[in-house]
Image (cartoon, rainbow, N blue to C red; front, side, top):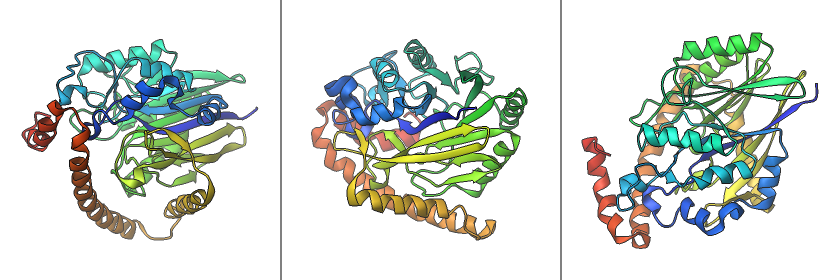
Length: 362
């Protein structure tokens, strides 16, 4: 069997983050349209049999209030779905911690806009309406069927799990595998800005691989984490950001993961990307490419370390605590610096956001 090539990219958020309203992805998309994605990047994605992403925003105008920061942030126009399809995206996981940000109606409309553009969705419940059950998208290549499943393990206010418990996901993976299908699992999990997965994630990935998943692709940390081969499967714990307006330097670069699944197993390669000043991902070249390859190798090596589970977990927790404090301080300073570029109506809303979050009304 000829190998099936799958391109996997990280988080896609085609709207404006609350801290850069008027200066985010949606602004650049409106300026460039389909040309927002550089031609060589789009060509590379389209060179694969299928391409998968995580859509971490509402692609919908349902219920939008232009004067409300809460209503406008992390929301893309319906045209964004058409752009994603034109760039070669075939599969979109919508099970994440932001898909319900603007309510169920906007989430359902997001699925409908993606499907209408020719992109199959996963993670939206069995019937795509964010009720219970597992949504499976199947595509056929060279006479072999590939089944895609999406889930979210982040338990947050606006998260949607994907419609099933972990044991139900494992049962579905086993059943699909027994039918001779290749199973690709897209999952939202982990901790933001961490350069490695937790022990709990690694153990879940191992069980998924043992159950028959050939490819496990993670999102949510917004930074690249290591890639691990196991049980004839591949686990890419976090692909970072593909299209997003994150402000932390580590969120500005990542990879497009190219996976080839064949009778001989799973092989992978990747292309380094970084965002430019207008949030547009481009390929990394020159000395920076050499430096980032070294960093990718370091993050992968963290997964092959002989450190025991207890020591790994202790180091993980300590680093997570330190990185959160540092990131919050840096983030607040950058938000203040960006306020002068926002519409005046949004400035007091940004300042009130921390209070609203504590009160549970954001």
